[in-house]
Length: 226
Image 1 (cartoon, rainbow, N blue to C red):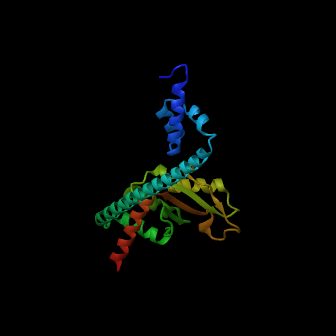
Image 2: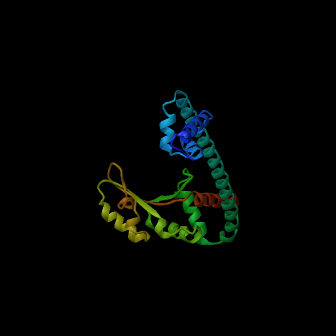
Image 3: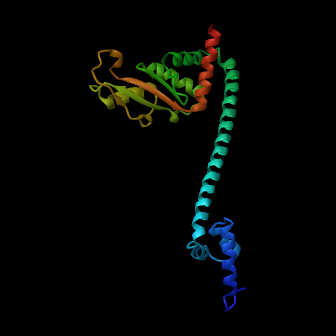
């Protein structure tokens, strides 16, 4: 215990120096020596060797953090690969169950002809014909289990078109709420095609696993048609 002579503090101070030289942090030293972190810092920070210890501790912490992140990323990659494998196996089973459904085949054919085959994350169908989007949306709901409120939509418009009118038109034709529309994009020029009087619609779902499943279905359909 501490006494009036300050013997305890002197002993704690000497212990603090010894532990600091061994690379302990101020927080660790404070717990060991029974003093506050502020006291440990006041004692040790001015000492020349302490600056080197601080740099070493920071470097070690950065290295430990790097190792931890590598470990986390490896675990995430392994888990993602496991999920992809499960999705592919499920897709193969589901394809056999769905392959005789007209809506299922129609949805796949629509995606083959009008869908985005570049992105690994987005399912996107682009067409100026609302009826094709309506069929594809029903396909998404029925076979991919997509919740309708999660579907996003945006329009590619010519500048001479009225944006609000076009949005209302597409919302009515597809059943997708205007609240689910992304910011629309405009291109230069004027539309001379009747089919583009309301622009080009884009139905979008952002889901990597569902994109993997859809890609697998398309692959299986291609194989079956060979």
